[in-house]
Image (tube, rainbow over all chains, first blue to last red; front, side, top):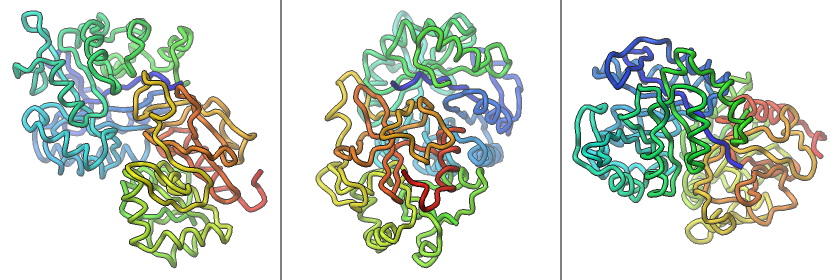
Amino acid sequence: MITKRIIPCLDVRDGRVVKGINFEGLKDVSSPVELAKYYSANGADELVFYDITASSDGRKIFTEILTETAKNVFIPMTVGGGINTIDDFDRVLNCGADKVSVNSGAIRNPDLIGEAAKLYGDQCVVLSVDIKRVDGVFRVFAKGGREDTGLEAIEWIKRCVGNGAGEVVVNSIDTDGVKGGFDIEMLDKVCNAVSVPVIASGGAGKISDFITLFNTLPKVDAGLAASIFHFGEVKISDLKNEMKKNNIPTRM
Amino acid sequence: MIAIIDYGVGNLFSLKSSFSHIGADIVVTSDKKVIDNAEKIILPGVGAFSDAAQKLRDMELEKFLKEQAEKGKYIMGICLGMQLLFDKSFEYGEHKGLSLIEGEIRPISDVIPKEYKIPHMGWNPLVFENGKHPLFKYINEGDCVYFVHSYYGANCSKSVIATAEYGEKLTAAVARENVLGCQFHPEKSGEVGMNILKAFCELKEGTLC
């Protein structure tokens, strides 16, 4: 039986890990390479690196960090942030990334997913979507959650999966940073719309939020979080012990 | 020394890093002289079977690798590299493999229940078959390894040394004397994966079951 994945997410700017509350007020946390090693040794099933650098210098540092991480950490690594072209895919895959996550890049260029899937396979292309309720409708937001694209989220996800996205990260802006639990309603809708793996993101505050997620929605494949892991509020080893106790398939 | 075959299929960065991490002496090459001098061979691969098989042929490595294996040299295929060791594959048509492992490559969708997602992607526990192979010397049954695949090794029961349960028993690893293959990615399977690579490095003639 395939196990449910626990994925810490590292937002990296200028070579350091940061994490914002509702995408604003970024706080410095730690060294990405050290944090990645720590998570891998303590049971993380996969790592996500998001490049939130604006400058080209920062991008170069990010690429160096990826390379250094891939030399030391031997679990799957997904890389996102600033992925707009096939060259961006090449750049991060050459540093040892296994999967590449696209968000705003796919909104700007809807052909990007299809082209990348053809070159690297569906399993390599991850669609990341920031979703927020607007007048009761799930809407796709771009630019780190700042801009309403007007796109209806479920339709957008279906379209991207149809084009070749092999996995979907659903980040609920409504629950992100609130630490009140994952957005079960939103995730349920997405799981019922697509047949590729779905990763839940946004809202985890404690161990029981992950247990509720996997028990309520057995179709969800993974839970992703950042600050609760970075600040040690939830230890991955404790979380996994609790998952096992609850008969959730877990890699120990 | 272990030669990782570089035939233009996929990225070898992680594979190379993982062997370096366990202290193995490795070279990434397509040079037949270097491969001939190496003690063991790793055949990597991601992507489509037919493209990879064609590239091996174009680089005149198909017959050469077969000869190397027939001489008794240890060769281990990883992911698509494992699939290439089989007689043939039914991925988009019918394509010939190296015929070092009896069996064929078929779509997972033929055998698993409909509600299971494809590709089979993620961490899945290993079930040992036909005893515990020396490749698994440092790991235990039930340890998880990382899979990403949509096709699997079929009709190879004589060579299967591990399976993974995914609605159906899927071939996870095969071995026939000095020829080995892993469907999963040891280089992405954390400590368990490193321990499999370590055991591979230590394999010597006479240690096989």
